[in-house]
Image 1 (cartoon, rainbow, N blue to C red):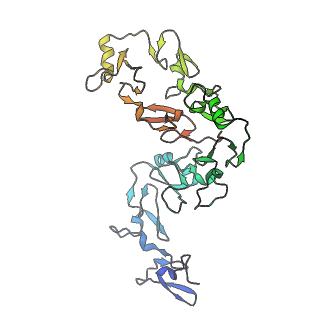
Image 2 (image 1 turned 180 degrees about the horizontal axis):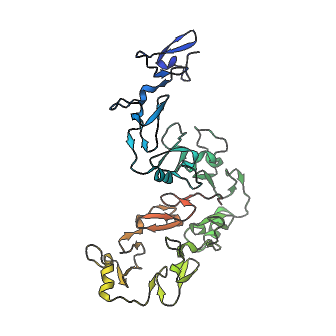
Image 3 (image 1 turned 60 degrees about the vertical axis):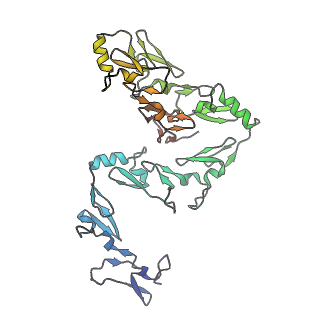
Length: 353
């Protein structure tokens, strides 16, 4: 009756007497307690200040629960950001703090990791938004049987292989086409099935994100999001989007119709705005027009206000920069709404194709 869940008598912190544990408290402070003497509040004492939880929290069963603005095993560290900013950084896409699956510590989520190895938890993500348990037909924390063995788990959602469907990829889909023929029909002139922007099933593409009319075409070859700048403006407000390419109004040009053809600046004024700190015009990788750099079209990966960025530095997934679900902004992916991850490879929307 005195053994704990690990079959240790009184957690090695007390003696058993007539079926009950008597905890060792030589100082008489009562810091060791619990039915099996499993709680040791001495673990909460700060070594330097000798205060419980550094004086900035409360101890319960050997664990410190810190006041707002403090963190650490013994509440010894103070946040350098405000509680409001900490909460904002920890807020997940569904509006919950750490998706109700973790604890917010100084603007960072500590997810409730249920993986026994602690190496890569079933719950992960910047705001604990990904729960791999949702990909298993029957949850077993020691099993890796994701998506019924017929798909890949992507942030808690199953991305089924060709020929399978269902929330857990549990249903086979009949198709008269071979897998090769199905992919060939979905590929069209692109290197990837459905242009890397959709799912191929039985020779037909389902473009994603679901319900987003900006991505369309037989092989999802048209992506209107490519006409949008980081602020969401289509073709800089000076053109229309046609299958992912801007058709500029008269008097404007550029990939996003961002450059006026007429310029009211002198050449010297224009060049002064295009020079980098070392005095080189557009970093030597573009030309200057009306105070703005136009990066070389031959080097497609060069970008930035002064052509000083290399889009090849952005993360890739499935061979696509930012997975085709975001814009590379000077080496970092700026994901479009509904997407997350270093390479914008994680879909966070409510539906998934």
